[in-house]
Image (cartoon, rainbow, N blue to C red; front, side, top):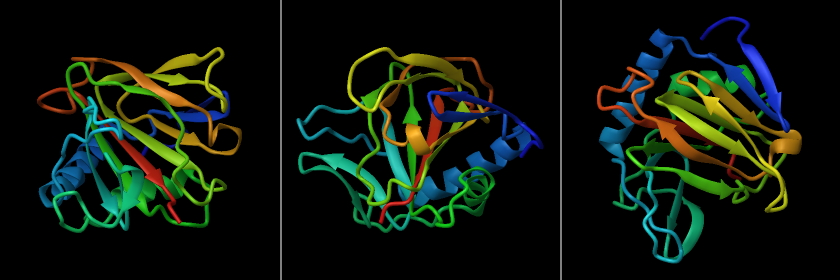
Length: 204
């Protein structure tokens, strides 16, 4: 991790620009590949049965899942296997920026390929909103949109680059947010292109 990264605040979202240098990003990708060998990426569907454009997996005590039964946390991958532990390289990021006594119980791994996006949503399936959500960007740039606690109203957008980390705590904890699009080819981190987003959460 870089020392003294720029910290920019938008609507309470704290963006640690360039927190992870290239060697740290490469090591993190290697650790994530090991996780995905245990719990492979899969394409989830919404409760309405619509396939999501991202592919996902998780690490930690719980994984966030969505299917016809709804949005929730589960202790096992839809394929039946346990989620792998959260890598130490990921936990060090949490320790560096979260300012939280509790450790994350879920590391959601989202992979954005061609045409993938994430609509405006709240992270509200957790029990303790006093704990922040920490988001890590790897690979191609993503246009991150930040909204309000209530749906609607004006929003603000910022491009997130590989190695950027966002902390959503305090007033930003329940604000709507999403990813409108990916700028493909903007990073050489992932050989096949695309963007990985990690979302660290305390669940219970």
